Image (cartoon, rainbow, N blue to C red; front, side, top):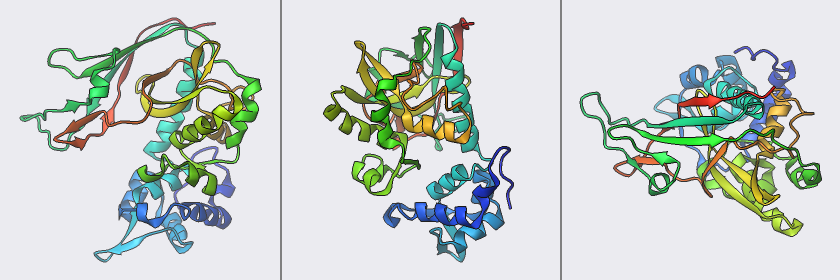
Length: 312
């Protein structure tokens, strides 16, 4: 069995935990699954060893026989890996993200430069592809395109400790029972799915809270963009509330996840604390940033800090 990462509670790998995890996976309707991932993918890409994978399969994790071999849904494997906190690239990203939240909270004025790198499978060293940035991205005032170079985004973040808003604790308590679960595109806007299953990613949690805000006298909007951090920024969706004549960013589901994992201190990062100005808004809803011949491209966001003054 693949060993849990340091600090992972032993009970996370018991039969009861496996059964609970498989039951949670089953809340996602089967029509959203694509069975393309192999057993080798489960081990090498998601840290799920053969014994654990067999236990999950025996407990009923969705799979199919394809050409004589068992295949799994990639998103199911990602959720298993994160739920059991198994060593994987996705877990490393989440740990780095929590560290970035801590770091940006204590930084002084900071200027970030983000390079928007598109990765096209058709490109070769001799024949690089013609990559088309989306209209929304090219129209953003913070984005520039140096001659012959990739798109870059420059953002200056002023100093300021992200505030907690205790008066908003009851509002953010609306998602206290919601479990973080990465969802397929067909469910990421479905607030009814959250209410029925108790599962959501940050995008769906933000949509739910925006719907609930008006009845509580709050002005809210959804946001999509980048959480700025070095060496890599992260594309993300979150919630903004209009407070003190400015938009303030919140990500209560993510904070609940990180404090539950012990990556952030629960007494310092309650769900009603802002994640700060490191959230760079590109639009209201998630959109495709770059394409090649109409095909959406995977992106990475290497980030440099031009100047910073750390607060004491």
